[in-house]
Length: 580
Image 1 (cartoon, rainbow, N blue to C red):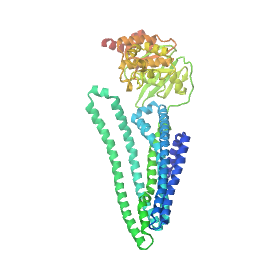
Image 2 (tube, helix red, strand yellow):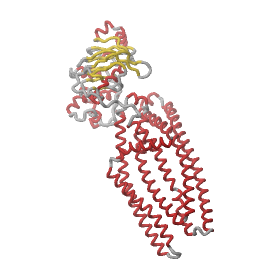
Image 3 (cartoon, one colour):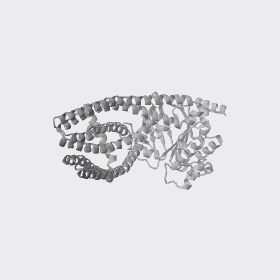
Image 4 (cartoon, rainbow, N blue to C red):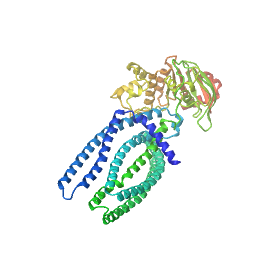
């Protein structure tokens, strides 16, 4: 039953892999053609060699030289063809792996945010970097193993011409060796599955350490982080030691059995010579070729090992490409010329441990500036996550221009909405490349205008390379405030009709924040703007302010009215006044 399941899994994985592998048909054709030529030569060499050597008479040295010359020409021809095939294959692998990795990047971007949050970055890094190579590697090893099998099979056929008893001896011993390797393979495979899961966590931890090195230093947490990292590394390395130990035990058994078979080969050969069933010269030929004959089934084992690795890697890759992780829906209504009406109707939402939003109702008219205030954890950012489709609405409905966001295609939804988060991610590109990510066709004048509005243009001009300045991983060369201003400019360049600011001015000084506020309120009046406030001063000029507490809306009104009738808002306002 298990073998049937394994075969079915291999068949399915190979079928899915073929979709990528077949794309470079010309290279694939040459690889197969050259492999076929090498295979023919590999079969011909041992068979013709055996026949020629058997036809030689004692003392015919010139004939022996001719045989050696024939073998040299065939072997060199095979090496030339094989080298050409490997050269073509390298380019084929590069193209195919790149295509698989790009497809994985594409599909990773479709995975639901909730799924991303549940896994470490290592889960995806390991699969994209390492497992993709294993998928293509199976065809490399299959080709080389096929050539080895054909070549050694030719040797085995040649043995039939020399000695039937020896032929059966090699067949029996090869099957015994293959059985031992089969047991080893199954044992190691189960350990490899566990090891790769642990390696994903290790990769994720290393990625976090590198990205968080500044915070680690500022916290003085080097020792604690090193202890944590050491524990994780030891855990992974211990699992690798267990795998190596298993292999060593089986290899020890395999090597000793092979040594015993070599000893029995000599004894059996001596016996056949004594009963005149085998000549000494033929025994020497068999002794010379015995390694290739004994290894015949080893190549099948190697292919089986690779297929095991292939299945493990392919399953992990196709979990991303297929249905292993929940994906965001692709289809839906495309919305054009969004006016910016946003409405929440009886919306409740939970991340798993109790509702974050509880029966939320509000409506925002096109062109309104609306602030959201409340204590940390009151549900402000969750509202933005639902509007942008980062999380699916669970109960109730969120409407954009009267259309349920669950019915809108996410590509269309996000094209019409810009979100500037509190901690925007700035990519390791140039400033310009970061700015034009969502609008590659933006003109230089519009890009500069957006940077001026975001109060970042003058700072960009201070860099030696201006807009071509490389900012490092995570925008490390920029300050927190500079990153936020680049993110604001990036969103303005996108030119969406709905703009969400999720505490996007929290890292700015008061002067810059005031300038940004002027820019925000000075945007086209047809743009709907929602602002989550770190400071109430950010939203006091909004058309209305939504006050949240423990996932519920307790009031919605302009600043002056809230000061008169909303105790929670007054409490927040007085606290901020005291903090000045």
